Amino acid sequence: MTGIEQFTFPFGVGLLAAFNPCGFAMLPTYLGFFLGTEDASTSRLRAVLRGLGVGTMLTVGFVTVFASIGVLVAWFLNQSTVVDQVGWITIGIGAALIPLGVAILLGRPIRLPVLGQAQRASDRTMTSVFLFGVSYALVSLSCTLGLFLQAVSNTFTTDGVANGVGSFVAYGLGMGAVVLFLTVSLAWAKSQVATGMRRILPLVEPLSGIIVVLAGFYLIDYGIWEIRLANDVYAGNLMVDQFLDVQAAISGWISDVTPPRLGVLSLLAISGLLLLAWRADHPHDGLRRRSMTVIWLLIIAFVEAINDWDFLFQPVVRTLIP
Image (cartoon, rainbow, N blue to C red; front, side, top):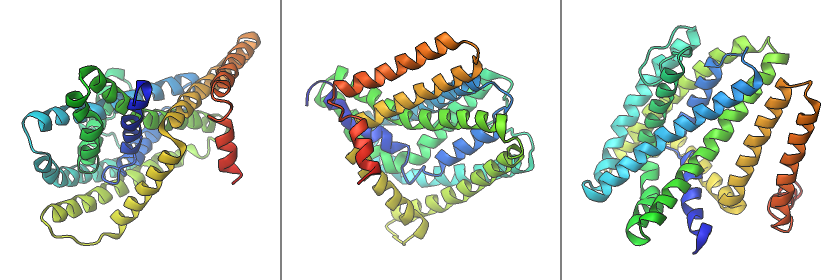
């Protein structure tokens, strides 16, 4: 492979990392926490921009762990040694999430170090999100470390430092594409709800608390299953098996749609939500509203034209109309 094609695999692995069955519960936990603690009175543009920043910080925390573990495995540790200990970490994080979810459900201040509330101090909030990204990565190690080493770490020794760095960046962009799209979409959606459906807002925080509690129980169950598996005591686990089936389906879908197309779609969707939020906050600036919309549509048309209209438009039509 040459050029950008060689980074398709690590980008796809990054996309899949967000949906791994080990840390699968962490994604709705993060989204539930973000939904429950966002200020509904914030303007749409500010809410979307904050979602962009929060999603970026979560991704940085996630890939920092994988970069560190990748270096340790390459130089000092055995991969199986790391994976064998992950079950205990998963149980610990799951146990910490349950009281966190109960606190959110009861509307009490959250002071746990991993997610501490501190919404009024931006730097402390971002540190909390970074630590959550670290937790997300730690519980995901046993499912994704092997693929990460294959897609990224091994590239440093086989293809050189430049390609290795490129593969690592592609992996981070893949993970970030999922997290940023979901976070920005949620921020935009909540700003929409805040303006037109205020009666629903009191239910949002309790719902996010329930999601966090359920995620905690799932992680404890998954951690026990991981420990039994590491000790060669295999026992079927209906819930884990179902999540493995979900991951297999997502993996097949990513392969069919292709990672580059999903990356471009995520970028266009995020930029589109930013545009919608900006338009909502500047209702009287008609000329600039129309100009920015035209520019966004021209970018989409350009992407389609250089791909013979078979990059986004035709695949979407084939998906909707089999």
